Image (cartoon, rainbow over all chains, first blue to last red; front, side, top):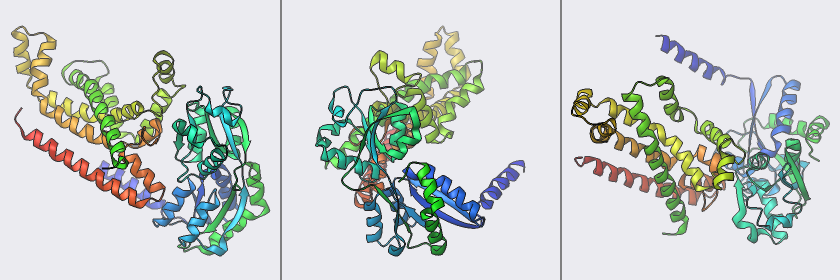
Length: 246
Length: 221
């Protein structure tokens, strides 16, 4: 009987978490983790009847989830290519699509290593592991690939690549010293503080802009649009700026 | 068959094979000692040996990463003394899979040893057999079935290891990307055709292994 009671408590707890007020599901790029966590908390303060469920991951991964029917209301990506794909697959409402932030790419190494001073140094034999997001689904990895191809280094470095599942994993690899260097967004490098050293600020040919849009299948399009308005408002911009977005 | 299937398959078999051997060699002695000997902290050791089975793989993965990472308390000496790096290598994937597979062999072997009649072991001792000989010639052969069944489960578990592997060894095509990771990557990239083919292929491989193992187990020992 005692065990039945315990089981009952577990189910009751699980059930209670389903019965919330208006829950707005926001899928955002991994690089937005800190900024959107604060944005969501502030938005909930202003709109006490809304609860934001934020889901962070590689942009292409998030789009894949939406495509498979995940109940997402708002989608924020770290590159235009992913959002373009969402638009071509009719997964987002075109009119709701807005750009809300800009970012940069940096080459960074673990703090105190001083093994890499420029992007060409990645060719050195002492550099064995270079981390970047998997370009197939991580925007930061796509930008890094573009930069490396433009520098004529992509093929030469292929054997050294450690592909991350999202940009925050790449950041973790660098901070932990598991890799000699890696490519992350400047905002990610900033969030890690002095645990890593920025070697070079880089600019890919494609501008690093972040689009946001309401998902086509969302039953809460009005609430979603309202959240996007908040992201674009002065209050929202101030939070994004605080984390280094432009 | 193309390298698209063969490379992750070869890697998966290599990782799962080494993991099963490593788990077998470490789990059987522990199972024997816990089931047959008076040990201090016996229950603690028993729980510790079962822990990887009940902990989420990501928790195991994180522990392994902290311990075996380049700057970890075990990872750093391994790297500096022997030049062995487990992060981002197939050996790391094998370690993750071995840890995941360990409890399956441990539990089956322990049950096997517990099923061995104590009087037979006593009789061997009375006839002058050393402890090692009792283990090798009496207990081990009599617990055989349980251990073999445990090894099969361990191999299957090692083949499918995902969470801890990805955390420790990463997801590197050709180096640490096993079949389960390849399926995940194909799905993430929206390449559903590749994901489906790999899934089908993995199902066929696993079913074949299962049949083969059952056929093998039916034979008398």
